[in-house]
Image (cartoon, rainbow, N blue to C red):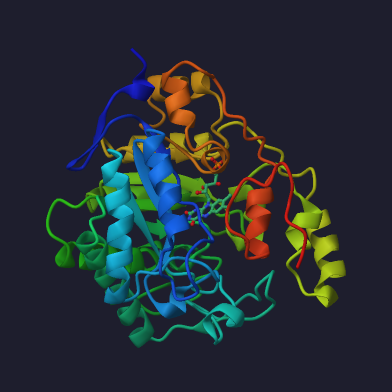
Length: 397
Ligand SMILES: Cc1cc2nc3c(=O)[nH]c(=O)nc-3n(C[C@H](O)[C@H](O)[C@H](O)COP(=O)(O)O)c2cc1C
């Protein structure tokens, strides 16, 4: 019997198979963060496609934590009715849904939040927006920890089956975890223990706020690939050990930050599409900068597998979710058989083929048809909804 189609428990939550829709920004919410019918339909379709666990794209826990224009928000109780319609749609189709809770920190822009983005430290100019973030005060930190806990309570009230804390891809929690971004010398930086404190306190505060038994998942990088050392596999293993002590319910392993975003989504670098959303005066520079990336990030199947191998032994029986370039059914099966991971997570393949799990189960195909052209990723820069643009990218307005 295929392990891919055997059920698994994530804490108290039973997942019918081993497939996870990795969090994927939808670009389909309103600028206020409210979800739309189109947004809800995307998730209904994924549930129809028999995805075991659906994780939503990042939801901002605070207005200041928004990173993208059409990102969903969970920053106020006003969001709950819309989010309830979302969970109802997934549950109607027999699916399970986790909300990804996130704060962009420095990976945002004035255009989106109306002020200078914040981070653990002001060090290091942003490679995309060219500003230095404002260093967070103790008050900012406490307020943000509370915002995560309040957002988790809202997720529960909206009927989410679980939450995933976004501690990967260079977003705020990743910024605290990384010695490259976090240059603080107080209780929140200066040592691994201190850099981990922000995530630890978020988890503890969420536990205090949510009813017992709601699974808490974490997504974390095994490698940041920043210009100077950030999270590397040995540090990720150390953090993973602490996450295991905190008894989180599952850990998803990824990589990359805005300083090296193509690591996160290895594959083609579609230069024209990537720079299309830039203002005219920035395009020539953008073309040079992005052009330099071409050919350096070709897809490697299961590119986070080596990271997962370092982390799996330190987390005991906490399920490990692996994401990044997983494309062939036989390869996925082998990863589970060899116990390198417990669940298989995909993002880009589900954008193109939301029904791929069902097709796998029915034996209609053995591989996904996504070729990692990354035009879906490029769509973010032009504020487009996240769709498969392999067959054509919308012209600039
Ligand atoms: C369009 C797009 C949006 C994404 N949005 C998110 C997100 O909201 N949160 C997150 O943790 N990762 C996000 N990711 C990263 C994916 O979850 C995943 O880690 C990465 O794409 C590698 O998996 P894949 O090879 O199966 O696509 C996004 C990726 C893409 C292409």
